[in-house]
Length: 155
Image: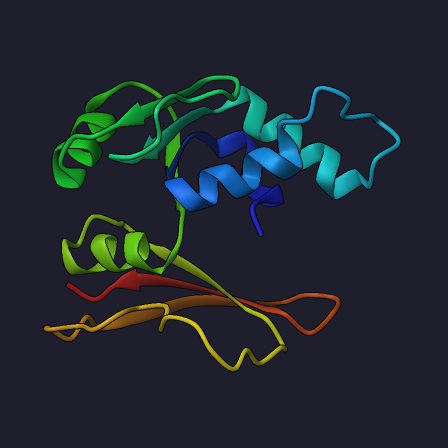
């Protein structure tokens, strides 16, 4: 989903679980050029980005250019937007996505719809107390039937 955006992004905000999961796949010291191209390319992209981990429990960040943040998420995003640089993306679990939506911190949303149905787990958006209306900007169909839905908030 992010391959076309690698040149326009330099900061990624993760929740703890997402950060730990990406670390297991992409922060391997033996990453080789012979790995699947998309895995290798994503690993190289993540290695060159500033990685922000939102966590009150992770004792230290162990991967590349990563930093743990305990600040209020609104203060963090406001500060990051004021810094020079490229776009910021959030890759996170449902609770982090829910915080971004509830606090209206995102300028846009890209939602990947996979043609697989999961039977249990948390609702991705969580319990919403206010309706957030989104405006569809584009739809991209992928090779295996996935859809990338690009939205912006209808403010």
